[in-house]
Image (cartoon, rainbow, N blue to C red; front, side, top):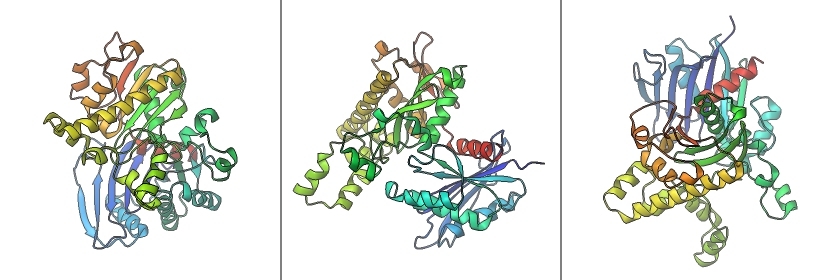
Length: 408
Protein backbone atom coordinates (compact mmCIF):
# COMPACT_ATOMS: atom_id res chain seq x y z
CA UNK A 1 0.00 0.00 0.00
CA UNK A 2 1.38 3.43 -0.94
CA UNK A 3 1.88 5.96 1.86
CA UNK A 4 -0.83 8.64 1.86
CA UNK A 5 -0.12 10.91 4.82
CA UNK A 6 1.58 14.32 4.62
CA UNK A 7 2.81 16.22 7.67
CA UNK A 8 2.78 19.98 7.07
CA UNK A 9 5.17 22.10 9.15
CA UNK A 10 5.15 25.88 9.50
CA UNK A 11 8.18 26.87 11.56
CA UNK A 12 8.30 30.36 13.04
CA UNK A 13 11.08 31.91 15.09
CA UNK A 14 9.54 30.70 18.36
CA UNK A 15 6.67 28.50 17.21
CA UNK A 16 5.87 25.38 15.21
CA UNK A 17 2.46 24.77 13.66
CA UNK A 18 1.73 21.34 12.25
CA UNK A 19 -1.03 19.42 10.54
CA UNK A 20 -1.18 15.80 9.47
CA UNK A 21 -3.41 15.14 6.47
CA UNK A 22 -4.45 12.01 4.62
CA UNK A 23 -4.17 12.53 0.88
CA UNK A 24 -5.43 12.96 -1.72
CA UNK A 25 -8.76 13.48 0.09
CA UNK A 26 -7.17 16.13 2.33
CA UNK A 27 -8.71 14.67 5.50
CA UNK A 28 -7.16 16.14 8.65
CA UNK A 29 -5.86 13.58 11.09
CA UNK A 30 -4.39 16.00 13.63
CA UNK A 31 -3.38 19.62 14.16
CA UNK A 32 -1.06 21.22 16.65
CA UNK A 33 0.81 24.27 17.84
CA UNK A 34 4.08 24.37 19.75
CA UNK A 35 5.01 27.83 21.02
CA UNK A 36 7.52 29.69 23.18
CA UNK A 37 10.39 27.71 21.62
CA UNK A 38 13.77 28.88 22.92
CA UNK A 39 12.22 31.35 25.36
CA UNK A 40 12.67 31.61 29.12
CA UNK A 41 10.34 29.35 31.02
CA UNK A 42 8.42 26.36 29.73
CA UNK A 43 7.05 26.06 26.22
CA UNK A 44 3.48 25.14 25.41
CA UNK A 45 2.08 22.43 23.15
CA UNK A 46 -1.54 22.11 22.05
CA UNK A 47 -2.46 18.99 20.06
CA UNK A 48 -5.87 18.22 18.58
CA UNK A 49 -6.66 14.86 16.96
CA UNK A 50 -9.33 14.80 14.27
CA UNK A 51 -12.84 15.04 15.70
CA UNK A 52 -15.54 12.52 15.09
CA UNK A 53 -16.37 14.27 11.83
CA UNK A 54 -12.78 13.77 10.72
CA UNK A 55 -12.01 17.39 9.94
CA UNK A 56 -9.66 18.12 12.83
CA UNK A 57 -11.60 21.27 13.68
CA UNK A 58 -13.31 20.04 16.82
CA UNK A 59 -11.74 19.84 20.27
CA UNK A 60 -12.42 16.15 20.86
CA UNK A 61 -9.36 14.74 22.63
CA UNK A 62 -7.56 18.10 22.66
CA UNK A 63 -4.40 17.87 24.75
CA UNK A 64 -2.30 20.70 26.16
CA UNK A 65 0.91 20.62 28.16
CA UNK A 66 3.89 22.72 29.18
CA UNK A 67 7.42 21.40 28.72
CA UNK A 68 11.01 22.56 28.14
CA UNK A 69 11.49 23.63 24.52
CA UNK A 70 15.10 24.78 24.04
CA UNK A 71 14.96 24.53 20.23
CA UNK A 72 12.94 23.40 17.20
CA UNK A 73 14.30 19.86 17.52
CA UNK A 74 12.68 19.54 20.94
CA UNK A 75 9.47 21.06 19.59
CA UNK A 76 9.20 18.60 16.67
CA UNK A 77 10.02 15.63 18.89
CA UNK A 78 7.26 16.70 21.28
CA UNK A 79 4.84 16.99 18.37
CA UNK A 80 5.95 13.55 17.21
CA UNK A 81 5.17 12.13 20.65
CA UNK A 82 1.64 13.51 20.49
CA UNK A 83 1.12 12.11 17.00
CA UNK A 84 2.50 8.73 18.13
CA UNK A 85 -0.01 8.67 20.97
CA UNK A 86 -2.71 8.73 18.29
CA UNK A 87 -0.95 6.03 16.27
CA UNK A 88 0.37 8.61 13.81
CA UNK A 89 4.09 8.78 14.58
CA UNK A 90 6.80 10.49 12.55
CA UNK A 91 8.20 7.03 11.75
CA UNK A 92 4.87 5.73 10.42
CA UNK A 93 5.12 3.85 7.10
CA UNK A 94 2.02 5.81 6.07
CA UNK A 95 4.00 9.08 6.00
CA UNK A 96 4.56 9.96 2.34
CA UNK A 97 6.20 13.37 2.81
CA UNK A 98 6.80 16.27 5.14
CA UNK A 99 5.79 19.57 3.55
CA UNK A 100 7.45 22.76 4.77
CA UNK A 101 6.23 26.30 4.34
CA UNK A 102 9.18 28.45 3.25
CA UNK A 103 8.50 32.16 3.00
CA UNK A 104 11.08 33.25 0.41
CA UNK A 105 12.17 31.28 -2.62
CA UNK A 106 13.42 34.25 -4.65
CA UNK A 107 13.37 33.66 -8.40
CA UNK A 108 15.01 30.27 -7.98
CA UNK A 109 12.08 28.22 -6.73
CA UNK A 110 9.00 28.42 -8.91
CA UNK A 111 7.35 25.22 -7.72
CA UNK A 112 7.43 22.77 -4.78
CA UNK A 113 10.89 21.24 -4.42
CA UNK A 114 12.27 18.13 -2.74
CA UNK A 115 14.90 19.30 -0.28
CA UNK A 116 18.55 18.34 -0.69
CA UNK A 117 21.79 20.06 0.27
CA UNK A 118 21.65 22.34 -2.78
CA UNK A 119 18.13 23.46 -1.89
CA UNK A 120 19.10 24.08 1.73
CA UNK A 121 22.06 26.18 0.61
CA UNK A 122 19.87 28.29 -1.69
CA UNK A 123 17.25 28.89 1.02
CA UNK A 124 20.14 29.97 3.25
CA UNK A 125 21.39 32.33 0.53
CA UNK A 126 17.95 33.96 0.45
CA UNK A 127 17.96 34.75 4.18
CA UNK A 128 18.82 38.46 3.60
CA UNK A 129 15.53 38.78 1.69
CA UNK A 130 13.51 37.23 4.56
CA UNK A 131 15.64 37.50 7.73
CA UNK A 132 12.66 37.02 10.05
CA UNK A 133 11.29 33.93 8.30
CA UNK A 134 13.74 31.84 6.27
CA UNK A 135 16.04 31.01 9.23
CA UNK A 136 13.08 29.57 11.16
CA UNK A 137 11.89 27.68 8.09
CA UNK A 138 15.38 26.23 7.71
CA UNK A 139 15.40 25.16 11.35
CA UNK A 140 12.20 23.21 10.80
CA UNK A 141 13.52 21.48 7.69
CA UNK A 142 16.84 20.52 9.26
CA UNK A 143 15.11 19.22 12.36
CA UNK A 144 12.73 17.07 10.33
CA UNK A 145 15.61 15.75 8.22
CA UNK A 146 17.50 14.75 11.35
CA UNK A 147 14.50 12.98 12.88
CA UNK A 148 13.38 11.11 9.75
CA UNK A 149 15.88 11.37 6.87
CA UNK A 150 14.08 8.63 4.89
CA UNK A 151 10.90 10.63 4.32
CA UNK A 152 10.96 13.16 1.43
CA UNK A 153 11.04 16.75 2.67
CA UNK A 154 9.23 19.12 0.31
CA UNK A 155 9.66 22.89 0.46
CA UNK A 156 6.63 24.90 -0.69
CA UNK A 157 7.43 28.58 -1.19
CA UNK A 158 5.17 31.57 -0.45
CA UNK A 159 6.74 33.38 -3.38
CA UNK A 160 6.40 30.60 -5.99
CA UNK A 161 2.88 31.45 -7.18
CA UNK A 162 4.02 35.00 -7.91
CA UNK A 163 6.98 34.09 -10.13
CA UNK A 164 4.67 34.39 -13.17
CA UNK A 165 4.36 38.16 -12.61
CA UNK A 166 5.74 39.88 -15.75
CA UNK A 167 8.85 42.01 -15.45
CA UNK A 168 6.98 45.27 -16.02
CA UNK A 169 4.97 44.57 -12.84
CA UNK A 170 7.85 43.08 -10.83
CA UNK A 171 10.61 45.63 -11.51
CA UNK A 172 11.10 48.72 -9.38
CA UNK A 173 12.20 51.87 -11.21
CA UNK A 174 15.63 52.13 -9.61
CA UNK A 175 19.14 51.70 -11.04
CA UNK A 176 18.97 48.37 -12.87
CA UNK A 177 22.49 47.27 -11.92
CA UNK A 178 21.89 47.97 -8.22
CA UNK A 179 18.59 46.09 -8.37
CA UNK A 180 20.18 43.09 -10.08
CA UNK A 181 23.16 42.94 -7.72
CA UNK A 182 20.98 42.98 -4.61
CA UNK A 183 18.03 41.00 -6.04
CA UNK A 184 15.60 43.88 -5.57
CA UNK A 185 12.22 43.28 -7.25
CA UNK A 186 8.64 42.42 -6.39
CA UNK A 187 8.43 38.84 -5.11
CA UNK A 188 5.06 38.77 -3.36
CA UNK A 189 3.93 36.53 -0.51
CA UNK A 190 0.90 34.53 0.70
CA UNK A 191 1.31 32.64 -2.58
CA UNK A 192 -0.05 29.32 -1.32
CA UNK A 193 -3.19 31.11 -0.13
CA UNK A 194 -3.69 33.05 -3.37
CA UNK A 195 -3.18 29.87 -5.40
CA UNK A 196 -5.65 27.88 -3.30
CA UNK A 197 -8.30 30.61 -3.18
CA UNK A 198 -8.15 31.51 -6.87
CA UNK A 199 -8.57 27.86 -7.81
CA UNK A 200 -11.43 27.32 -5.35
CA UNK A 201 -13.14 30.47 -6.63
CA UNK A 202 -13.10 29.07 -10.16
CA UNK A 203 -14.61 25.85 -8.82
CA UNK A 204 -17.30 27.86 -7.04
CA UNK A 205 -18.20 29.45 -10.38
CA UNK A 206 -18.28 26.03 -12.04
CA UNK A 207 -15.39 26.91 -14.34
CA UNK A 208 -11.78 25.87 -14.87
CA UNK A 209 -9.06 28.09 -13.34
CA UNK A 210 -7.59 28.85 -16.76
CA UNK A 211 -10.93 30.37 -17.82
CA UNK A 212 -11.28 32.77 -14.91
CA UNK A 213 -9.76 36.12 -13.91
CA UNK A 214 -9.87 36.59 -10.13
CA UNK A 215 -8.79 39.27 -7.67
CA UNK A 216 -7.92 37.52 -4.42
CA UNK A 217 -7.86 39.54 -1.19
CA UNK A 218 -5.98 37.76 1.61
CA UNK A 219 -6.90 39.89 4.62
CA UNK A 220 -5.45 38.74 7.91
CA UNK A 221 -3.05 40.43 10.32
CA UNK A 222 -0.81 40.36 7.26
CA UNK A 223 -2.71 41.29 4.11
CA UNK A 224 -2.13 41.14 0.37
CA UNK A 225 -4.02 41.31 -2.91
CA UNK A 226 -3.32 39.42 -6.12
CA UNK A 227 -4.50 39.69 -9.71
CA UNK A 228 -4.82 36.18 -11.15
CA UNK A 229 -5.42 35.77 -14.88
CA UNK A 230 -6.34 32.27 -16.00
CA UNK A 231 -4.70 30.66 -12.99
CA UNK A 232 -1.47 32.68 -13.26
CA UNK A 233 -0.58 35.56 -10.96
CA UNK A 234 0.12 38.75 -12.92
CA UNK A 235 0.43 41.23 -10.04
CA UNK A 236 0.41 41.29 -6.25
CA UNK A 237 0.57 43.97 -3.58
CA UNK A 238 3.50 42.75 -1.45
CA UNK A 239 6.92 43.36 -2.87
CA UNK A 240 10.56 42.70 -1.97
CA UNK A 241 9.26 42.05 1.55
CA UNK A 242 5.82 41.53 3.13
CA UNK A 243 5.80 45.22 4.18
CA UNK A 244 4.56 46.69 0.89
CA UNK A 245 0.94 47.04 -0.17
CA UNK A 246 -2.24 47.01 1.89
CA UNK A 247 -2.63 48.42 5.39
CA UNK A 248 -2.16 45.49 7.78
CA UNK A 249 -2.53 44.77 11.47
CA UNK A 250 0.88 46.16 12.44
CA UNK A 251 2.55 46.92 9.07
CA UNK A 252 2.26 50.21 7.23
CA UNK A 253 1.90 48.88 3.70
CA UNK A 254 2.66 51.45 0.97
CA UNK A 255 4.49 54.52 2.18
CA UNK A 256 6.59 57.27 0.60
CA UNK A 257 10.18 55.89 0.75
CA UNK A 258 11.37 59.34 1.78
CA UNK A 259 9.60 58.88 5.13
CA UNK A 260 12.53 56.63 6.06
CA UNK A 261 15.06 59.37 5.23
CA UNK A 262 12.96 61.96 7.07
CA UNK A 263 12.77 59.87 10.23
CA UNK A 264 16.51 59.30 10.09
CA UNK A 265 17.40 62.97 9.58
CA UNK A 266 14.76 64.68 11.69
CA UNK A 267 13.91 62.13 14.39
CA UNK A 268 17.40 60.60 14.58
CA UNK A 269 15.96 57.09 14.31
CA UNK A 270 18.23 54.21 13.34
CA UNK A 271 17.47 51.78 10.53
CA UNK A 272 16.53 49.14 13.10
CA UNK A 273 14.14 51.54 14.86
CA UNK A 274 12.46 52.51 11.60
CA UNK A 275 12.20 48.85 10.61
CA UNK A 276 10.50 48.07 13.92
CA UNK A 277 8.18 51.09 13.53
CA UNK A 278 6.96 50.17 10.05
CA UNK A 279 6.61 46.43 10.72
CA UNK A 280 5.39 46.32 14.32
CA UNK A 281 3.95 49.72 15.29
CA UNK A 282 2.15 50.79 12.14
CA UNK A 283 -0.96 49.69 10.24
CA UNK A 284 -4.13 49.51 12.33
CA UNK A 285 -2.10 49.38 15.54
CA UNK A 286 -0.21 52.52 14.63
CA UNK A 287 -3.36 54.39 13.68
CA UNK A 288 -5.57 53.50 16.64
CA UNK A 289 -3.68 51.21 19.03
CA UNK A 290 -5.50 47.98 18.06
CA UNK A 291 -4.54 45.53 15.32
CA UNK A 292 -7.64 43.33 15.74
CA UNK A 293 -10.28 44.38 13.19
CA UNK A 294 -13.07 43.22 15.50
CA UNK A 295 -11.94 45.65 18.15
CA UNK A 296 -11.45 48.42 15.59
CA UNK A 297 -15.05 48.00 14.38
CA UNK A 298 -16.39 47.84 17.97
CA UNK A 299 -14.60 51.07 18.88
CA UNK A 300 -15.68 52.74 15.63
CA UNK A 301 -19.34 51.89 16.35
CA UNK A 302 -18.92 53.38 19.83
CA UNK A 303 -17.85 56.70 18.29
CA UNK A 304 -14.06 56.38 18.57
CA UNK A 305 -12.61 58.75 15.96
CA UNK A 306 -9.17 57.09 15.87
CA UNK A 307 -10.75 53.71 15.15
CA UNK A 308 -12.93 55.29 12.45
CA UNK A 309 -9.88 56.80 10.78
CA UNK A 310 -7.99 53.49 10.96
CA UNK A 311 -10.91 51.67 9.34
CA UNK A 312 -11.27 54.30 6.63
CA UNK A 313 -7.55 54.28 5.80
CA UNK A 314 -7.63 50.45 5.65
CA UNK A 315 -10.62 50.47 3.29
CA UNK A 316 -9.25 53.28 1.10
CA UNK A 317 -6.04 51.32 0.45
CA UNK A 318 -8.01 48.12 -0.19
CA UNK A 319 -10.30 49.83 -2.72
CA UNK A 320 -7.30 51.43 -4.42
CA UNK A 321 -5.77 48.02 -5.10
CA UNK A 322 -9.11 46.55 -6.08
CA UNK A 323 -9.57 49.24 -8.72
CA UNK A 324 -5.97 48.95 -9.89
CA UNK A 325 -6.29 45.19 -10.43
CA UNK A 326 -9.50 45.64 -12.40
CA UNK A 327 -7.35 47.76 -14.74
CA UNK A 328 -4.50 45.20 -14.74
CA UNK A 329 -6.79 42.28 -15.61
CA UNK A 330 -9.12 44.12 -17.98
CA UNK A 331 -11.84 41.52 -17.39
CA UNK A 332 -12.67 40.38 -13.86
CA UNK A 333 -14.90 37.38 -13.23
CA UNK A 334 -14.69 37.33 -9.43
CA UNK A 335 -13.34 39.03 -6.33
CA UNK A 336 -12.61 36.62 -3.46
CA UNK A 337 -12.18 37.56 0.20
CA UNK A 338 -10.17 35.22 2.39
CA UNK A 339 -8.16 34.87 5.66
CA UNK A 340 -9.26 35.99 9.13
CA UNK A 341 -10.56 39.46 8.26
CA UNK A 342 -11.66 38.63 4.73
CA UNK A 343 -13.66 35.60 5.84
CA UNK A 344 -15.25 37.10 8.96
CA UNK A 345 -15.44 40.90 8.79
CA UNK A 346 -18.71 41.61 6.98
CA UNK A 347 -18.23 45.37 7.41
CA UNK A 348 -14.89 45.24 5.59
CA UNK A 349 -16.42 43.39 2.64
CA UNK A 350 -19.34 45.82 2.45
CA UNK A 351 -17.14 48.90 2.58
CA UNK A 352 -14.62 47.52 0.07
CA UNK A 353 -17.28 47.03 -2.62
CA UNK A 354 -19.65 49.91 -1.81
CA UNK A 355 -20.35 52.20 -4.76
CA UNK A 356 -18.44 50.09 -7.28
CA UNK A 357 -21.51 49.18 -9.34
CA UNK A 358 -19.87 50.72 -12.41
CA UNK A 359 -17.19 48.03 -12.14
CA UNK A 360 -19.85 45.32 -11.95
CA UNK A 361 -19.36 44.81 -8.21
CA UNK A 362 -22.15 44.54 -5.66
CA UNK A 363 -22.91 42.68 -2.43
CA UNK A 364 -26.16 41.15 -1.25
CA UNK A 365 -26.18 42.03 2.46
CA UNK A 366 -28.40 39.09 3.32
CA UNK A 367 -25.83 36.73 1.86
CA UNK A 368 -22.93 38.76 3.25
CA UNK A 369 -24.13 38.57 6.85
CA UNK A 370 -25.49 35.01 6.79
CA UNK A 371 -23.90 32.67 9.34
CA UNK A 372 -22.53 30.29 6.73
CA UNK A 373 -19.17 28.56 6.56
CA UNK A 374 -17.40 27.36 3.47
CA UNK A 375 -16.96 28.89 0.01
CA UNK A 376 -19.94 30.99 -0.99
CA UNK A 377 -21.09 33.82 -3.25
CA UNK A 378 -22.27 37.01 -1.55
CA UNK A 379 -23.09 39.00 -4.69
CA UNK A 380 -26.61 39.37 -6.12
CA UNK A 381 -27.51 37.35 -9.20
CA UNK A 382 -27.51 40.45 -11.41
CA UNK A 383 -23.89 41.41 -10.56
CA UNK A 384 -21.53 41.25 -13.52
CA UNK A 385 -18.62 40.27 -11.24
CA UNK A 386 -19.06 37.56 -8.62
CA UNK A 387 -18.03 38.43 -5.06
CA UNK A 388 -17.07 35.40 -3.01
CA UNK A 389 -15.92 34.43 0.45
CA UNK A 390 -13.50 31.51 0.15
CA UNK A 391 -11.85 30.21 3.33
CA UNK A 392 -8.17 29.70 2.73
CA UNK A 393 -6.33 26.50 3.60
CA UNK A 394 -2.61 26.95 3.16
CA UNK A 395 -1.82 23.68 4.93
CA UNK A 396 -4.02 21.73 2.54
CA UNK A 397 -2.39 23.51 -0.40
CA UNK A 398 1.08 22.62 0.89
CA UNK A 399 0.03 19.01 1.45
CA UNK A 400 -1.53 18.83 -2.01
CA UNK A 401 1.59 20.16 -3.71
CA UNK A 402 3.94 17.96 -1.65
CA UNK A 403 1.89 14.79 -2.24
CA UNK A 404 1.64 15.46 -5.98
CA UNK A 405 5.40 15.98 -6.22
CA UNK A 406 6.43 12.79 -4.42
CA UNK A 407 3.91 10.78 -6.43
CA UNK A 408 4.76 12.29 -9.80
